[in-house]
Image 1 (cartoon, rainbow, N blue to C red):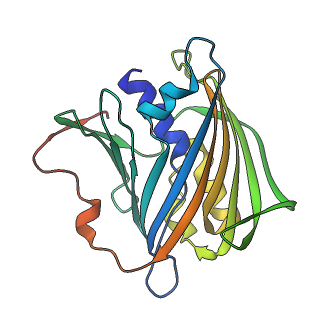
Image 2 (cartoon, one colour):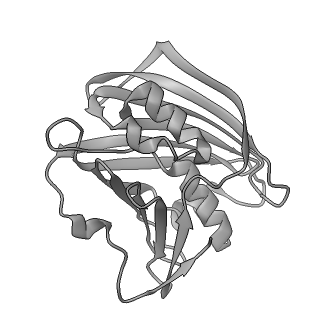
Length: 225
């Protein structure tokens, strides 16, 4: 897979997080990931290797970081989203550069946005409502032409939706405003590539050091602006 494809996958798997020790969730969420391939040329095992079958998210109010436990040619992948700065940083274990991208620049058209109050699922003992987001890319060069996802959340794990107003990529600003909580189960379809289910298997509330959310200073940062 190309680095660009990885970045698109990151966007789709970039779940809406936030934190504050007093009002909003702060801590560590561990997820398992399962895949179904929609492309005859790519078996699901390729996604398991390159993206990983698990990920760990570190969540604070104005920033979050995710480590995908891939074991492929680029190794693990870490994504830092700095809502306070308006940028994301993407690092691969076996690459000596870090990609810096401005949030809110994706060109997309919303097809459907719906809160599903009745169709609930239980995650770690919490009954969760969900939100469905369906959109298409307006970029003719984009490989992933369409995305449809259902994101389950519990009000127990609150986020600060004000910080997501400018985070329009994937329409996460709408998700944050409607849910007010991080998502702990995600069912996504990335057309024409794959389907994935990402489910939290542990959630630990704890204070986190800001050092977790700083890019690796031993690597070169390349801006995509």
